[in-house]
Amino acid sequence: MFKYTADLPIERNVLLIYYAICLFIYIIYLRNIKFDYLSIILFWIFNQGFIMYFDPYNRVTKIVLAIISTILFIKSININLNQIDRIIIIIFILFTILYFIHYIVNQISLIWAIYQFYKYYIPFTLYVGLKSFKMTYNDAIYYGNLIIKLTIFQVIFSILKIIIIGIRENIVGTISDLGGGIGVHLAIMCTILLWYMHGRELKGKDWFYSLSFLIIPLASNKRAIWFMYPFILIFILFDKISHSNIKRTFYIILLIPIVLYFGFRLNPTLNPENTIWGSFDLNYGINYALSYSGVSEEKLMSPYAQGRWGASSAIVKITFQNPFSRESLLGFGRSRSGNINTDLFDPKDYGLMPGTMISGIGIMFIQMGWPATILIILLFILMIYNISDKRIRNFFIIYILWDIILYSGSLITTIFHSILLIIFIYIFPKYYQSLYNQKGL
Image (tube, rainbow, N blue to C red; front, side):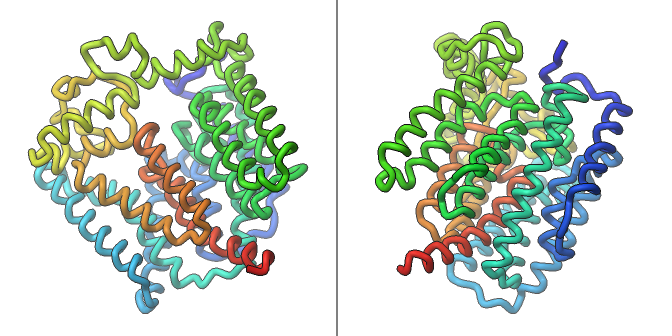
């Protein structure tokens, strides 16, 4: 019988066999990787799982990435920055001050503050550091292809995972030892990358690759992808609908129901039988998602808010009822594990069901207060403004806001996603410049 959650640990010898086969596949098939800073960063974040087998806290990865991003940051000191970049630096300094103040005020060790600061420090220093990289169009092609190649390996490893370990949140390819939103966001971000690399159009085998990316969240039993991916298809196919009208409209009409059909049947929580390949029942799947998010009629009648959306809505509401209280301004801090400090924070004070899921913005408000939360969100939005193409720039801004407000917020708080996003910020303008030149504009 399948176990679909991460509650039960994987036996160490089973995990060893899985990683050994993954490593063997890499050795046989992976070729032509440059030995430069950015290639090392990409290869490292896509293979954290190997490190985490020996170091569950992933300390080695944090140290290595911090060192590389710092080296790049130092190299960029004499680079001329534009006005937006200067604002970004000022915002990061203000965020850093607030970040450490809330640890001091909440009497939490500054050692742990520094240790947990890496998730904000690395993307910021990498963003500034890549200013000195002087990336060319050929570099963008190489790094884009490397990301797609490494993602295809994750698809292969996800199939291997299903065979050896089964469908469960534990293990995302060789990236992580726990599912979370990594598989969901990787499938979406790489579909967008593949589409943009190929002139904002998917043809032939491109569709095979982009749809195969769905195997990654499928292997981790993630339900969110089946609700999000149809919107990605609309975004991709609607881009040139006026040029190919009937044919492209047909693709949209056909693909979305197919994705929903297979997604709902393959995810045990979205079908009535609660099993893989259960029956398709659209109402059941939607009602489950509403209940899980805390906005179903039943959950809304409860005296306590619950679910990602419901809990975060309650937190935001209470925070802005008294925005200048110490808790609203500075939050409750993080515990030693980096999660909400439950020694200080009582969910019932915010009208929350104890143990409920909370979306990204709710967690950030509770951990570090609303000023620091707004600053870090604004920081990422301003960094995204480096993307020249207005359509793709707006997509990533909406996407990151959706993730923060309604989902996990991991595009900001998970180092894998934030690094990938920073690299996208630099390679997308190079593709756009090529498209711009090809059109003779």
